[in-house]
Length: 191
Length: 191
DNA sequence: GAAACTTGAATGGCTGTTTAAAAAATCGTT
DNA sequence: AACGATTTTTTAAACAGCCATTCAAGTTTC
Image 1 (cartoon, helix red, strand yellow):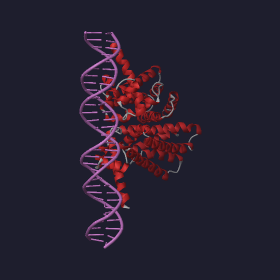
Image 2 (cartoon, each protein chain N blue to C red):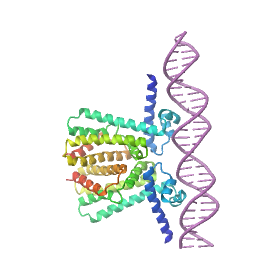
Image 3 (cartoon, each protein chain N blue to C red):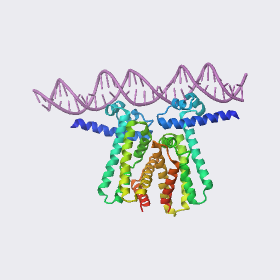
């Protein structure tokens, strides 16, 4: 029982430290020693838990992907109409616990580096196609078939772009403002 | 006369090689030796011309920024109405010579790394505020004041998002398709 | 006492930059 | 045109530093 628990505690601590350290120093530049220091541990112990630096990065992204997925199913639970479900897909990306500068920052670094790591690009592919199919499912109920793909691209690009800007923000983000702005964009696309 | 020319030729060759090499290997991982090999030169000669790796990166981004600026003033030349000028701002980002996978890729890597380099973040700030003011100038002529900022954010986020996706594309891009898609988005925002 | 956990130190490899010396280009003079 | 002098360009090799990973030897937990 406690065998598992210690490992899980360390995992979370190290992943949180990774998010902070990557945000502060940059994905390509951050060192194991810096992440370890942020977590109050040693570089060697990170390898003990995650095997390698790439393993740590993969676990960190897996963690963030999980949070995103969880936020989305939580939103789906209360949504009744296709439009509400479309709101829910957008809202998940701007959820309070997700839409923070460090997390948007690390997400962008993930995007930038995914093409150069087979393990990361796998995660990237999975997540993107999941978001994509959620969008398509709701849009098909709201728009004529020939407009669906254009609308999806517009909304998904908007979402990505907001994160990209958020990653560069110098002050704290306002998730609720981002959500209502996103709703306005949805209403623009689907009158 | 020819003193200047050789230096300019090498500069361009090395910058082109940088774009290719960074696209292939990633900003944070690419080495001077790899860039040099791509250009058919030696790592030492890059330092001779650019002083350092960071200097090379700054020069490369300056080059891309210049191309973007040039594309935009070229578009402005033929635009007559505010709406046409708004199209022109979008079109510049999707110009034939600019909207390619390697260049979108390096641009994203630039975004991701700008916060960690004072020289890059300076360029980033300059470019962003320039695009922003272009957007605002045209939108103010087309929308009531209280809608301008929302529309600007929607359009600029869309643009950024398209580039982000383009950087991940596995096949060649279609700049004209991107331009007409962008026009549709503009028409959506400004009826 | 065994298993799980932690870490300081060693390892091996790789990187950007400098240096010094050679090669190439340019120029002034004849 | 030719040629020596001077400047510009090139690079191989050396340098200095850093980093992920490993490992052996401890410490903690059960």
